[in-house]
Amino acid sequence: MRYILFICFQLIWLQSVFAGVTMAGTRVIFPAENSDKTLQFTNNTPQPFFVQLWISKPSDSSNDVVSSDFTFNPQFFRMNGKTGQAVRLLFTSTKDLPKDRESLFYLNFKQIPALEKEKQDQNKLVLIVSSKFKILYRPKTILSKIEDLPSSLNYRIDHIGKKSYLTIYNPTGYFANLTQVFVNYAGKNQEINQVDMIPPFSSKQWDIGNTINKSDISEVSITYINDYGAYLKYKINEKL
Image 1 (tube, rainbow, N blue to C red):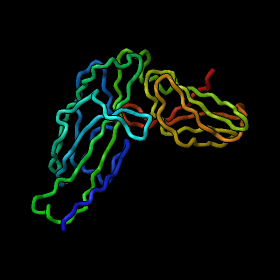
Image 2 (tube, one colour):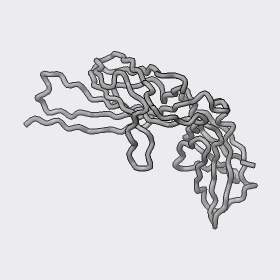
Image 3 (spheres, helix red, strand yellow):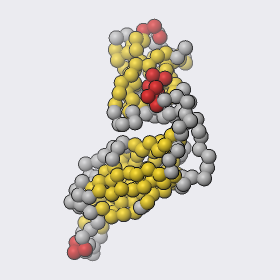
């Protein structure tokens, strides 16, 4: 009896050692004034792959919702070993997306090894790798500049009962992609757990332990990923 066992690896914003096909860049910035954008995919291995692409948007549930706001040309294709493939990402939405802030979508692509015909009757372990990247739909009517995003963030320390909480505010129309937050308290640099992205005009709050005095906090700093995938560290100010 012949069989094929499929194992899926889910990658979020990271490349995997198992991945043969990669996409250039760490995210897609889609200017709202454009109708399309060209993406570049590369197969770095001698193994041919089939690639399937789709778009999803964030959801309150555990799974993203498939979106029709964008489409691809082509949407499904074969990539031979050591080759590249240009793909057009087209904006097809009929909805009016916000003009004062970015909208977030996800680009998903699945790569499936293409089995050689003479080996199709053999038992095989087939690794199906799924990758996921952010798409930031960016209107040019956002008031501030993306370069000013990190310096626009600010924080506040709140006390509720015997607990202290750090809240970071994002007053801009851009998504703040944070990877680390540190609070320097009484000479010790405490790293905050489970740091994630802060949407436009919103905030995120973290429990930082027992009640602390704000006067003992010398610095709150963040590590932020910019449009080019660089990790940059910034000190942010207290919210007045």
